Length: 341
Image (cartoon, rainbow, N blue to C red; front, top):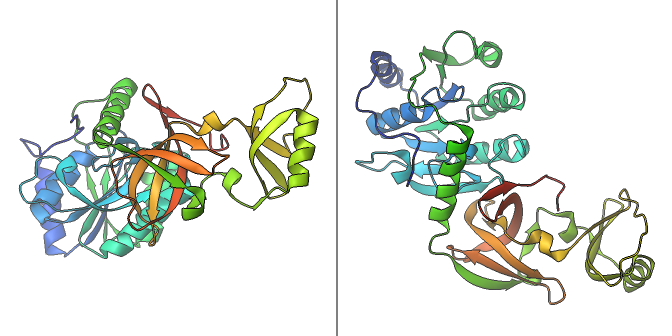
């Protein structure tokens, strides 16, 4: 598997100073903050190797611990060389590899994992430090209340993030490790390689709507449309309605065209889509605790018979919810808009 970072052959002196500081001051909850390609994952590898701490992998765009599109807690493994060898214990489903698309889910996931781990963990974060990235970093620090923030900073590019915490949390500044810089295309290749690895031994299963909560799309929320409403909409728009619901004062319709007619549709009142829109969508398999026990890909939804065909390497034991994400896997990874479904 392609990985961004492994155990470094040579280590900068300030990394050993940081290690000594953590041991001397008994720092048990640590968060790493730095821009893109500053060596956060390499540093996390070094610290975990020496401290035997667990990892909270919150770098959703460049995950070390599978599965992708989640944030994960991994247990320390003796003798590991790179973070991808660390075993996942718990994951929280984000549904995207873009952390700014689901900020609430990112924050909830990191908080839940930190609460579950309690202490002796290191949080590896994304390289986003401006805009929504600044907000994410600040809120993670507020929620997790770490003992130590490790700032990988060239000059003062993290000051806008760290300023509110200067008198509240210990901050240890170190220079970034300038290793290999990854282009956008290389990062995409790394992600796609991990998607392939995760779904390598997947199998097809079929489930019924009524056996699971289906979330992540308004189409499955609210109340079902009545027979009269279905008939009215079909007559007006010349549709065959396969599935329909009402939520937040709006109709959500899954349909096929019976006859193509030019008729305007008020999109503030009716949101409509074809059933194929859900194909190849990544979904999270959510357990009773709200954690993600695995991922699946929607192969097909049979709205008439209210069933889904999923492709997954995971068991559905203890799964109570199928949560739709915003990643499609078709000839590679494709992110879709939040309002796509």
